[in-house]
Image (tube, rainbow, N blue to C red; front, side):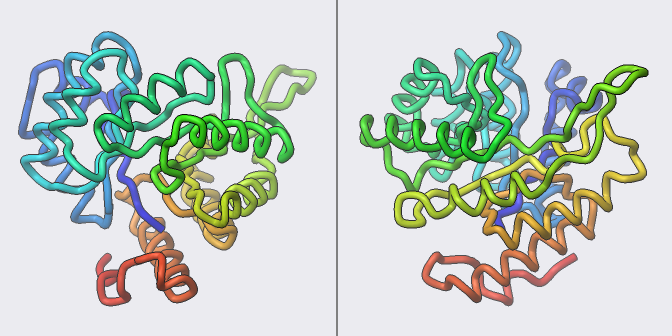
Length: 272
């Protein structure tokens, strides 16, 4: 399982201030810390607003001064091309919704710059709630990719892991999600197009709105289940040693089962 660190996030107050003040040291330290803790790649979460466009190339420069690891970049309206050029090979455009026009422009951008594409299986105003709906959107994305001649192996699909919101007499409340739905989605999506389609999830999304004391336990359980279903990439908090260790174990099991896929050797998995 490929581990993507989620620590460079504009919602983090320290990161926000570092971006505002162009504090190179904070960004470089955040990147270095995540890689030392076990991240294989880094997610740069900036949203898609105007502020993203100006800061993204600078952020990429700071991370590149530390490592040449794969970077997952937001689909900013401006600044994306320059950022991808600075990021170099093995870069990803992350969090692209499955809206037709959006996909067309992102397939073009990724194709021109040799980047991979992470597509959320959602559209504006539409969040699939059943396995059939998730797989239907996945097929539509794949059909459009084939029409645009975008390589399947450079496409990652995200079934959008999330908790459930239920209406009680006292109002709405967030509760544990139906993990079976996402396990089945990961399993089935991973078998599309002769098992060439890869899957990705943001692990912390599953605990949004839930009490802090359940985050670690629930994320560990979900990671284990999604790993058994065949999950390829996970965006996660690398400061949690238990989570990192669990993801590495899933990667080792997958490499032993599918060595031709090029998963890392066992000796590469040593560490915290």
